[in-house]
Each structure stands twice: as C-alpha cells, then as structure tokens.
Amino acid sequence: MATVTLKQLQEAIREEAVDGWLFYNFHHRDTLSDELLGISTGTTNSRPWFYMVPNKGEPIKIVHVIEAHILDQLPGSTLVYSGRDGLRNLLQRFAGKTLAVH
Image (tube, rainbow, N blue to C red; front, side):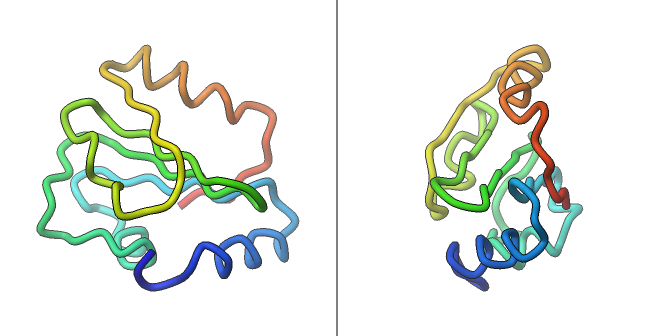
C-alpha cells in the first residue's frame, strides 16, 4: 500500500467499530481512494473496482476481468467479475456487515 499501511487502515476501522472499509472507484473519480491506496491515475480504470479492508484479516479485491490487475500492488485475495450479475454476486458476501464506504 502506498500512502497508508494495511495495519493503519485496520486500526482506524477498529476505532470506528465497523466490520470493514469498502473502497470503490471508477474512472478515477474518487481521488481519495486513489491517494490512500496508491493507485496511479495513469492506469486505465474503465470498470468499477472494489477493495474491502476488514477490521482484521485479509482484504478482498473485486476487479473486472478486463482490468484484473488494477489492484495487484495491494495485499489481499482477488475476485474477478465479468458482468453486473457477477459483480452483484460477489458483493453479496458483504451483506449484513457494517461497512464504511468511500
């Protein structure tokens, strides 16, 4: 991770008493996510990606098959989707969780 470490993020998440922090970006519209996670604005970001940092444990990257490597520099396991239904199914794993979202 570039600007902040995973440990720092997870400490902040625990301080807020939530289950995790779900980052989302599309076309680099969320400059804070890019900055915090160290995503270069020079990379192609034509498909939505998600990065869920739990309050403890391994983060989960959800990326589109066309841009499957956009979050490779971040720790965590990668889940790949190829359409709206596939994305919806992957995001269902967070149902019932209390997440900070940015």
